[in-house]
Each structure stands twice: as structure tokens, then as C-alpha cells.
Length: 390
Image 1 (spheres, rainbow, N blue to C red):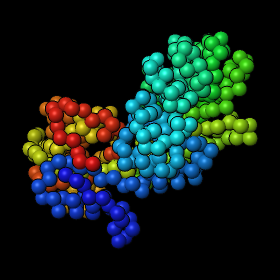
Image 2 (cartoon, rainbow, N blue to C red):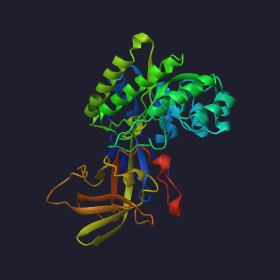
Image 3 (cartoon, rainbow, N blue to C red):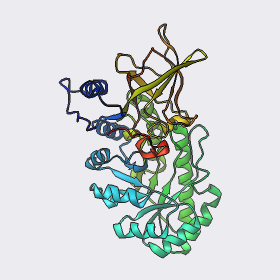
Image 4 (cartoon, rainbow, N blue to C red):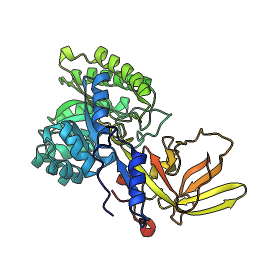
């Protein structure tokens, strides 16, 4: 199915529900879920970013959502890109991205991948161990290296057991870079996805400052600080982002003042695309079990709702035949406990555990908001289910 483009309704405002209803009403035979994408959302997010983090140059994390239409919008905005593989690099370059605005943000790279980056003129890349330095020395000795530091936030999804140089290893790793004659360009960290605590980033910035002092002892003068990602900002949640960003901005100015030549960048993904995409899905099954309504969608955690496996709290839904928006906090006399499953044969394929929702029937459509992050990017072929139209 070719999904119609939305080119502004008379109100001048993007209305995902209105567009979804129009698609469903005009295409009675559709049975596949589909995306509704607000292409004006990323520009709005960039405007907000520049208002509250004017010094921090965003590099969109391609892994979050590699949708070409969204990437074209982001390339047009002139921001940078965080790429973690050769294919991600190829993709953004094919869409016109500037190689000098790309960070090869993976601390473990194959020799051929390092050589590929060299061929494409992508000098900035991350590392966190001595073995990686040895590969870089052989295949790209003029690279501008960013040492990823280990920072822990217990309250969010984090990868620090897998990536990041522990503070106690910084002297030996920096010393190895010096002995190999490599360019230590700066430091990076990633506090974790969906972190809502500016204190964690502020603590991480202090770790970067301590690492910089070590680097200076070896004769380096690193001037780049990469504060990673983990930022979220769904529509209506701007105040939370502003609060977090305010603390980070103050810490950056204090520890790494622009007057001393420091450059600060970041790697946001969800921030730019999370609320840009909604998914319209159809109810294809219904039953009752022990006092609870169970609905089955033509979607799945194996297609677009992978984040539901990690307790995604950002889902909001709206039945197309109604006007109310529901989330996990909804209550009301005409609502009933409802669990929403994906259509795969895996028992863990549960999109919504138990919300109070109105009565809905097979054939009804619902719109699920805030589904732009780690949806299309993580889609699998399990059960060979139909992918949503885009």
C-alpha cells in the first residue's frame, strides 16, 4: 500500500489521527499496520535543542531509526551523525551527509571497517581499549581518537558493562595511545537510554575533566567532549528535557568553557525521532481471560515494539473511532482492564501489560504514539510477519 503524504491540513498543524482516519477510510481493504510520520517534528526538536544546548552540536544516532525519509530531513538540517557501522556510514553519505560531521561511534571495529572510514574521510572515531588502538595504528594512524569512558546510571538502560574505559584504566590506555603516536582528540560517555537525571551527565563530565588532566600529563591537549545520547523529548515533555539540559549546559560551561577552545558534541537518537512516528495498527483478535480483555494487534515486539520488552513507558494510544488518548495512568467508569498482545507465536509478545481501556472490537484501528525510536531499526523476520507500511 502506498501511504499518502501529508502536506499540511487547513489548520496548518500535523494531525496524526486525522491522517490515519483518512487512510483507513479511503482504503477499506488494508490489513497491514502503517506508520504516520510528522516530518516537521525533527526541525522542531532541533530548534528546542539549540535554545537550551546552544554549544552542543548534535550528531544523530543512526542506529535509532535509519528511515531514509527521516535521515534526509536531518541531513537537510545540517546536523552531524553518529554511525556505528560501515553500512550506516554508507547510508548517510549517500544522502549527502558531510564526512567531517560523522563520528564513527563504535569502540570495537574490524580492520576493514577502520580502513573504510579512512577511505571516506571520517577521522573521528571512538575507542576504549589498547587492542583497538593497535588496530587503529595499523590501519588509520591519523585518526582523531575519542576515548569512551565508563559511566554508570543504575536507573536507566545502560551498556557500560560492554563499553567504556573504567577510570582506573585511563592512565594505561592514554599512555598506550601516546606510545603508539596516535591522536587523542577527546572523550565521550553515554549515561544510558531514557535517563532523566542531569546529575549523571554532570558526574560524567567531571570524569571527563579528570581524564583530561591525565591526558595532559602525557602531552595531549584534547578539546572535544562528546556527551553521548539518552535524551528523550516526546510532545508535551519539553520541560523535563529543558531541566536536564540546563544542568548539562551549566556543567559544560564550567568545566569546558568555549573561551578555551573546547568543542562539545552529542549523539541523540530518540530525541529527534521518538515522537515523529506513530503506528496505526488493527485489532485482529479478541478474547476474555480471568476478567481481562485481551486484544491482538497486527503488530509485534518483533516488528515495531521491541522497546515494550524493556518496559517502554512512552506509549500512548488512541482508538481511531474515539477522541481520547490513553496511557498506563488512564482511569474511568467505562474503561476495563485490557492487555494488548502482538500477533507472533511467542508468549512474551506483549505490547501493553494491563491498561484501563475502552471496549474495542476486531477490525478497529488504534494509533500508538511515540514509536519512532528503535522500532524500524530492530524489526526482525520472526514468524515472517508483515512489516508496517511506511
